[in-house]
Length: 388
Ligand SMILES: Nc1nc2c(ncn2[C@@H]2O[C@H](COP(=O)(O)OP(=O)(O)OP(=O)(O)O)[C@@H](O)[C@H]2O)c(=O)[nH]1
Ligand SMILES: [Mg+2]
Image (cartoon, rainbow, N blue to C red; front, side, top):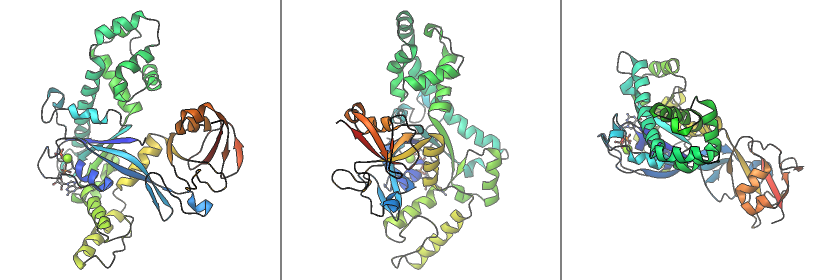
């Protein structure tokens, strides 16, 4: 299963434009609010150097693709209909569509940077753009946690079972497990007895969930409408914000789809299919992107995976010399795994039987035998030897 990242934000912020640019799927985009009326689901990628260059053979990925030594590893993207203040009370489209991102590992909070920067208090309006959406998320999560709480808490306090386990059963739909819940409970000042929890405690829990477990990554869109100086000033306001232009990225994606360029990476080299006007537009976009003031969406996804979610990429193979599976496919799988994972975790991820029958593993780059508790590193190519 690939990781899921949700795109959330106010109407018209450019969520669907960004979705379309990074998933290469055409969806409805328009300059009026509430264009998207149901979630769009698609696949995007993080880009990594493929170990195929080390084994000297072209890889054959089961999922995603690989070109010029760059491996495109799939991540799932969900574009959610726009949220407005009061969505939790049913305003606008309401917030019922947030359930489509409840199992997302991270949320990209898309806001219109150009609008926020038009005001005299840019820092204040950016802060508001982010906090308005966060508020709706907190209300949504709090309401799921507190649903039927009294009955649940009374029973939970009276039985001899770990609180984490009971909560995991109740709110597992939020995409958090026992381990996550334990981390939240250890970090917060939440009452030990569940029956003593009240409104503020549900909110504290939800807040900790979004800061510690499900990251919210702010993305300031429509940067093409903003001067370079102003874009650079964002870094002083909030260095976590990624300025982007979804519109330009969509133009690049469409140019790629129509064969006007062969790679989305700059410098763009237009093919003979591109006419003069298209070449000019591509040059303009290239100048904007190369200025370094903005982020590219694939880099943002890469950073979310690597720095926020702290995931590494591991390539399981069956044959340690050819780096292939039983059928001869070279480096068929690229698994995203939590940093600190072990060969045993990898074995279980491949199949429960492989995990249960684990004997030892081989680090295919060094050809060294490694044990079940060894710490895997990013880019490792691993053979698991198992009884099954
Ligand atoms: N200039 C500029 N316009 C953009 C950019 N991204 C989106 N737009 C425009 O903003 C408008 C809204 O874009 P959408 O992608 O439909 O916005 P959304 O957030 O999905 O909106 P809802 O579905 O209503 O929530 C459209 O007219 C887009 O062309 C951008 O980076 N720059
Ligand atoms: Mg939309």
